[in-house]
Length: 308
Length: 317
Image (cartoon, rainbow over all chains, first blue to last red; front, side, top):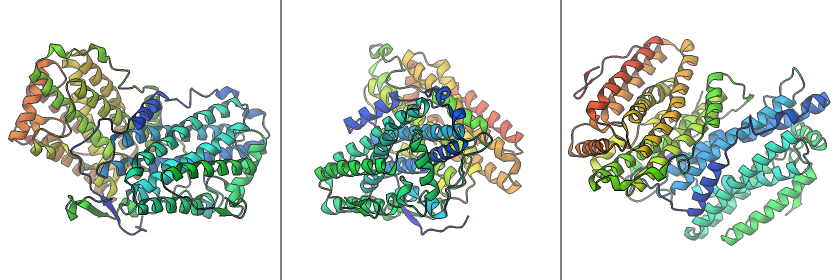
């Protein structure tokens, strides 16, 4: 495989003194809570209540595609989160709770990959398999953003990375999952979404606690960098349809259509209107929280959403 | 601040081409179980999680039974265990990234998520034990000993795509973790303190899966490996044994003689005599030799022939 990117400067770890004692009590409590919240996708979900065999094959195909896309979304964390763990270890003075919590977070992400994939397989029409790649290269590119490289890159401020990927994005995922859960009556799918919402609540809470812990040490430049990183993420990732394919009617038409059918059937998706409302609520909450830390999010604009 | 002023320029950054320079291409992504035995390890690990806070009988720890010298030595021992386990949190997640970038079977990434969490549990439980014995130590008492416990070099190797993944797994998992597992099994047998024994047993149960992962992976890959790749695997295993294990990474008595390593060895002896979890040269030597022999036999079955190893404390094995 050829190298395609410029060399990445990374930090060199200074391991000792190695602090493992409690430094951020709220994060330590979250870590303990996460350990207790362990679950097993193969046992915790009433798979016998899925009822896929009673569904129309076209609907099954759409729902399988919807849940396979969710598995892809979760699977990006299988490289992103370990990169964050290593970055927190390499950067001098970071708190022990961060890497401890993130290793639990990554296990939860693995369970979510497995649960979403199990749903995709079970929902697929008999003899068929869920899609193995997105409908267009443009949409696939959103899953190949090299987040692990960004996390390793010493030129990227770690707090800004946390703000985007451990606070903003996880909070948005929680808000969307809640919208998807609201229209779901299927017991198996509801059980999966309940677990995902609980995990994503903890994950975004981690970002929130950590940012609040770090904020007193930030400069005006640090705050501007965080606001800019979130704005860039919104423009280049969210508005490109990464979580909400209906925002990219050209690149993600197949995915948007699958989500629409799945939402209509109450199989764990939400309509564009419901997701837009969830996004607006989350933007409001995120803006208020970041405002208390002195970070001013700009106004966002998208042709299908308007300004807000 | 990303960089700190007390780092030397050479220390502060390193330019990494390798893995971080590779393009990412996740698709096709279907999450099929390509190595079913590793997928099953992921499921087994999911079912067998434990919590250092609640699954160790801490109430049975009676520090009044031990002398001050024994407690201080045991603090040193369990702190060193914590540093050693922490290495797997700090370095091994890089391997998981590599599995993804190289599009290795998804079973490997899934299992490694839980493996890293288990390493966190191990560091946490060792830290807790040191705390309860009087206080965790944040660095070796003798600064000179840091070189033996600071790193096993896995992060650098995982980022370097010139080093085959098979060689890293063979060295890190099939060698270093295999040795670590044998030590924990030995500790379970000889440790008398009920809390120390329970910790060793819990860690050992996780280490069984960690070792199995390595061997299952090598078995899956070996048939398609070229003679040159097998030679790289062989070299990596030799380096891990000669430069890391025989340098005292897991066992202080194997470290090069110095006042620093002598102090660690003495601490281990006092801890062992108290039954608080360590072992000593005369007790561990046959265990270590058996580990090397078994690793050699298993590698031999793959057509990878390991040489004899020589160490002043072991002779030639």
